[in-house]
Image 1 (tube, rainbow, N blue to C red):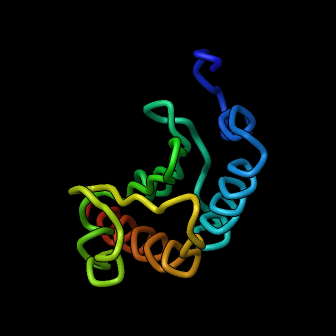
Image 2: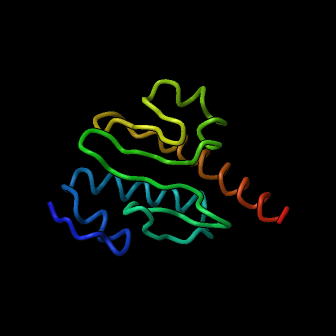
Amino acid sequence: MDTKKPENIDEYIGAFPNDVQEILEKVRMTIQKAAPEAKEKISYSMPAFEQNGIVVYFAAFKNHLGLYALPSGHEEFKDQLSQYKSGKGSVQFPLKDKMPYDLITKIVKFRVKENLEKAKKK
């Protein structure tokens, strides 16, 4: 595997096999649609979307896609996420299963709203 760090999300996605690229691209489009004003970046060598702070990160692994909506995004949707393996700020969606794009949309919209409310308080 290429150990060069990706400089943008296109490079990141391009480093994976075609079937995984399709999933990553669809996740990326799902996030873009849910957060149209968010800017794409690479942070911690992962694709990230930023709008008044990080909205969400995502990353592909051998058997799953990791979504990182920081603790609050996971806490808010813990019931819907309970069927997936998760940590404090991460959830793993198995690549072999249907990706929960609707849930990803809800999480991203929640995080955008949360970041906006935090920004207003500053």
